[in-house]
Length: 401
Image 1 (cartoon, rainbow, N blue to C red):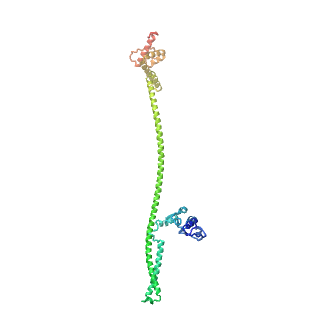
Image 2 (image 1 turned 60 degrees about the vertical axis):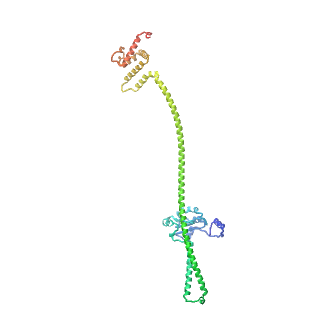
Image 3 (image 1 turned 45 degrees about the vertical axis):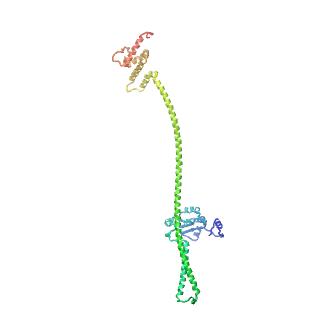
């Protein structure tokens, strides 16, 4: 075993191996291929006891691109994987990982994957008709033993073909004894070897089955690992959604609290408005029941009629307004007397009012009999008021009591 890594050498020394140092010339894979005029590399194995990263760094994989790469991927004498230190650079050079046997990792050039990729779909199995190294050695040893046995058998047959004889008559009696012993030994070894071959083949079959089981377990572990990663990602997404929903719930709680505060404020304001409305209603009822409101009703009606005249003319509006005023005044005690006194002091307004209700043209003396036929109720009321005013004007002051 050899290595160029001092740390690995110290590990071997600790393990009981003797260390012997040599100085050798080193070169890169590119220079090696260039010096030997290499054109095509079908298969390249890299097994340098922990020095794989530096060896692979010495090849650009552009001018020389091996079809298949086999690289030892564990630390020396262990199952600790080491490919993380050099595999990324290899993948960047367009090589695809296709298979691992527990010790080595296999890669195929991307441009050759369509041609060679299917050969790495399954691990070595029964249909490949392969032999383990130990079985091959046993088979070759058995073939050598069978060859030796055939040679001894041929020599024995030659001696027996010479005719009957006694062992003492043979010139080479010791040789015959030796050949017999050798024949017996070889035959016993052949039987033993065949048993060993059968045992080795059974062991190989058992190891193949275990190997296939391990591969299936590795694949299952990879599937479970992928499922675990997927579950972890789903869990992370679910936790993120829960956090988002928790934030939304907190925001909704703050919003509900704000709405509750706003609702409480609105209820308080509504209560205040109801109280104010009740107070205003009391004031309005007091105003509507007041004497001044009833007295000024004709004025309000007149203003409304004057600002928004009906399809007729304003004359009819004035007639209606004055009639309403007289009806209202007639229902108030003492208003008739006050109205008559006012009309006497405003003769021009009195004459226009009489003319408005058709009692007499402007400027004519007032000579209307309240009992005359054809007078409207309002005109009759005006006539009564005017007659009363005339009568009072004819009475000297102080006699109307």
